Length: 116
Image (cartoon, rainbow, N blue to C red; front, side, top):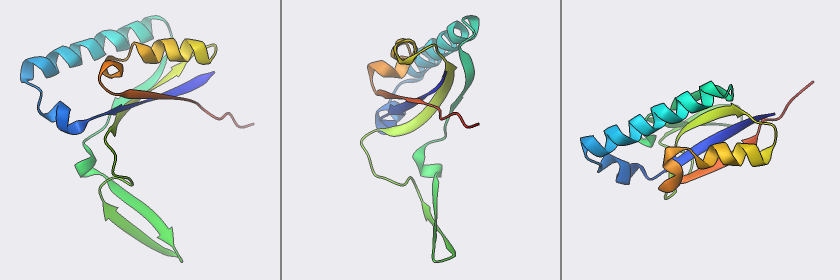
């Protein structure tokens, strides 16, 4: 079954990290991605630009409305994701717990809806 692991983190805290601290985090992410790939569990994964680059789109009464920034103001922001293959939710949670940002942010695990 496919699961999406959504990575939520505090962008402000991350922006204040030293170059060495950020380098260590990126190295940990590289090792995590290698482990996922080696297990055949990684389907996709990407980091997102900061929320300052986001545009929210809504259609109301046939008009397209855009707003700079994310849809909601929150303490933690969506920073990226991994789409994984796991036999069940327990295995997906085990993989999510290994994501480096799980120690400072939150990882939301959601099954992907299968159609047809």
